[in-house]
Image (cartoon, rainbow, N blue to C red):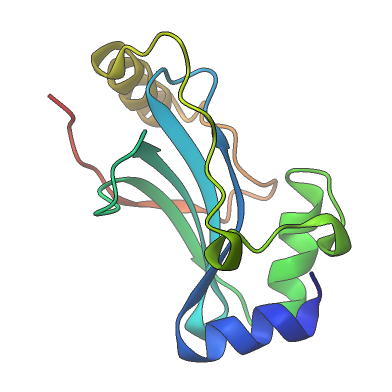
Length: 133
């Protein structure tokens, strides 16, 4: 992936550049999504949920270059190693055990204590909270 591909996708919508199981939060996946207007969100969404309700931490950057630089340092992968999950549709394999209720409790607690692993600089702020039942 490169700057041009991210720019092309975000011009008309969004691009997911990273998706993985959120190991600490059972039943959740963590996604990194770039949106139009240099907005980037780190999202924690229940496994297999397609309506994107979950927990989001977002920041709008002054440029796409700055957004890419910050995110490159977060999963510690250069942009050239990122995968366009919007294009490929790749999704993590379902874990053997999931406890969404427990994962939700731990995630909510970490949010309240400021312990959620996010990019450095305290830029990303919570946008949406949805309680899983």
